[in-house]
Image (cartoon, rainbow, N blue to C red; front, side):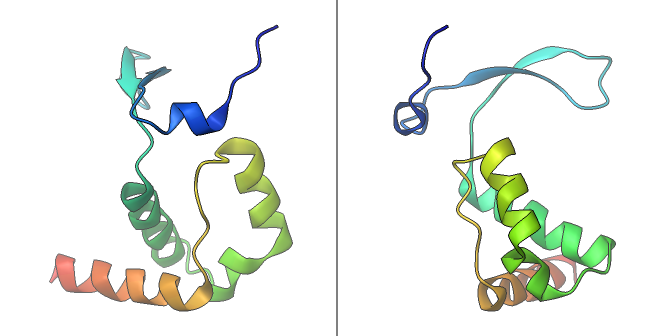
Amino acid sequence: MKTVYLDKLSGGQKQLTFQYGDENKLSTWKFDQNESRKALANMLVVDELPFSFVESAGFRYYNSVTQPLFKVPCTTTSTTDVYQLFVDEK
């Protein structure tokens, strides 16, 4: 089995993935920190989660397993992201 070096993946290399809800079409995907932060802010709003959720041990562990490239923002940054999401939707 080959070792995947995460620092090399973040340099612009795309990965293959199946698109969600699109009859399992294969497509390319590239990690984007900003899009991930927007998705996290959206999750906090839709699921009515407290801002402190992002600093919970369970979420940080889940994130480190599923997407180690994502740098989890602090509570203050998450609050700002949710506010920005609100402003953009207005």
